[in-house]
Image 1 (cartoon, rainbow, N blue to C red):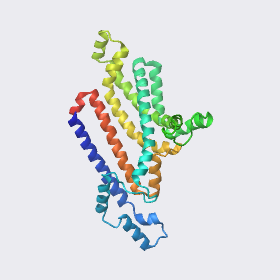
Image 2: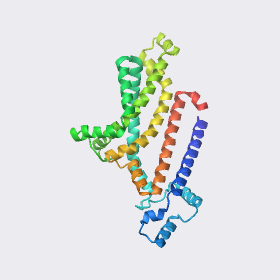
Image 3: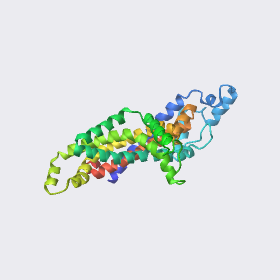
Image 4: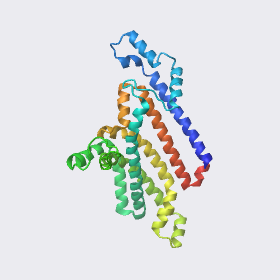
Length: 313
């Protein structure tokens, strides 16, 4: 197991490094006259040259990359070109919001998907039809449209939840729950559709296997067979789909955070990209890559626990 974890960690480190290299050279090489964009078109040539020197933009691109990555490995991603705030400070305050949204959505999607998938596989009939309908709706309707309807119905119309903003859980648990419920609901439908479909197919396939009939012949109840044996075998593919959905949720959070005015990574990315704040964009890219690597490692460990053969792959 240790060698399994070590291989995954090494692969993850190489992935983060590769993403950093590609993102840095694309952003800086394609950024044009960055110093002039920061100072404005009315700035003099002398002022622009001085600004470029202060930011190190007058140096060769490979030297700029070395200066950046030598600090980045220590957790220092530089400072924002516009707010002069350290990038790590901006990221740390906003990561909490985005991770709360994405992790909460993943948990809700996992629980609901297991319930719907198992019911559809075991019962069939109208329950299976409902699950299929939910899956189609989840894939067809954009998340931002669901978010707008939820705001109109449950926030504006009924007043049950907050329409915009985020309240930290340390400030008020009920306020935090009110501020995060609708965003999670809006973001989770597509994930539920994908994962529930996978669980339904995997459970249906597993229920037709010989070991299920053997366990039933030994007198084990169907619930025990399904939740202790079938789900264990069906869990691997479902976890893989859930990992893909988690990565997709990071992208979907950009739109949802805009709709609900949540101060997360998505909102930071939009503002930094529109203003050309490359250090902040680089920080977001690297932080996202690290999160994806950690999630994939956790999924690999979970799959290895469910299926020891995975450790040898």
